[in-house]
Image (cartoon, rainbow, N blue to C red; front, side):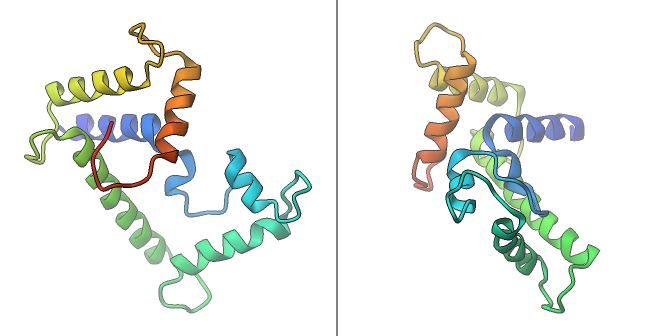
Length: 149
């Protein structure tokens, strides 16, 4: 069961979540919106100086005791909180009957609904372009508290 749960977590993360979602360390922006936000002088390049405020903000979030250093225990605590939130999101999306277990049938229903939702031309398959459009639409969709595929 643990392998199945781990596989689901990895699949859900790859299929739905943006890559830096769990990042604790600084990272270079990977999409145009984040890049533009980071590129303070709008010259089309991100410098270490422009990245520093974002890195400092992440550092401050991790430094719970405000001693100016981030310990392994603080990183572990942040990772555990993030993992618990992610587990909740996975269960909310895939556990249709809310019994705390994801069955193969629930996984199949979720996968079929996800593909159907992303299949813009309704041909039964999803092209890379449709996947990218689906991800962009998911990111732009306002949070309503409702579970969607």
